[in-house]
Image (tube, rainbow, N blue to C red; front, top):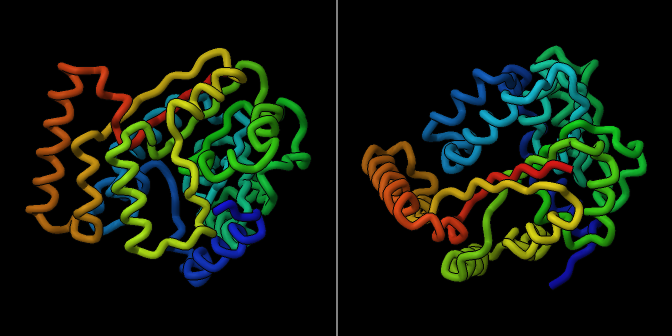
Length: 274
């Protein structure tokens, strides 16, 4: 089912509203807090710790202190505020005004409100920004939401300067078995259409990126280890962590021997240079 931007906005406004009462001390965000989150087996980042660990390494390798950055589909604003604490000038963009409210509170709680702006806008209209305004655009599990909207990718490319980077952390959708299991899970959990998950980023979408970018590099990860989803909510249990660790080790061996299987992994870090 195709949905409208208003339907998706209302869904995420409602979802993010649960975080409106988060105290300021819990909004503290910097490189050290992100690293702690990656090792907190009870936290929201743990399930994707390999993907987000790769994101953190990539972002911290950039000269952020000199950069103008767009956090595209910023959600609760963790990554955008992280980059602001590293000296970047950051624009938070999300369809949800509630997400932007929380992101700006996070910026204030970390003393970087002067370097962070917030925009609750439709991704298909980035007219708030000039051509080539940003040196770097980061999107965490966001691009697959916006590709369905006409001109969204054109706008994203327009506001990135020539030679600038687009960094994506995404679910990877080439594996028909994983895709079938994802859809089954969505069905069983009664995930509403308004969640906007109708597109899973695959090589088809990456080929579309190549029309706009001079270079697109990928780092796929987690093939067998995508079974980690079965442990969701139970990663604090030693047996579950050990099982996931064993699958990750098996992936390292298998993908080292058969690198062609990487395209069937379940998550991917994408770095595209305009």
